[in-house]
Image (cartoon, rainbow, N blue to C red; front, top):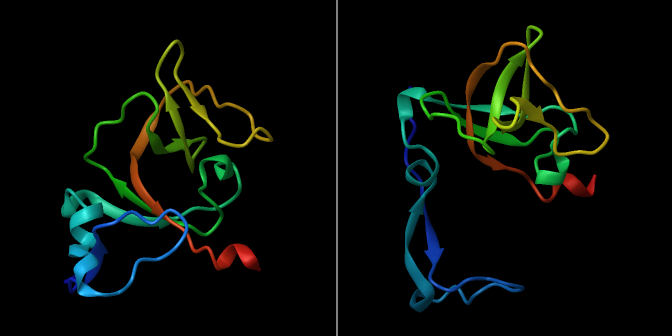
Length: 133
């Protein structure tokens, strides 16, 4: 399916606690989210997070994750893994022992007998407005 590219201005100045003037002087270039977030179009997909096990990372229920199946998972990456026939998103620990780490103290670490990874989460997006509800 063809996805039209939408380019949005990327401001040259960082924004700590305000918003720069929309004057053209501040625009560095246009930013295409496809170019920013997708390295391998054929192996990338989007999926919504479910649950609260990654909230300390800033990943909340309903957030959209960008997942790349072709990315080689490394220690510390956020991954989508199959555990007990279900998919879960966790931080990957490869040493000293393979584990899937939740980013919420209310959840337990998973020590899988077998590790089946679906992909690496390369980006995620959440709505700050959704947190107000």
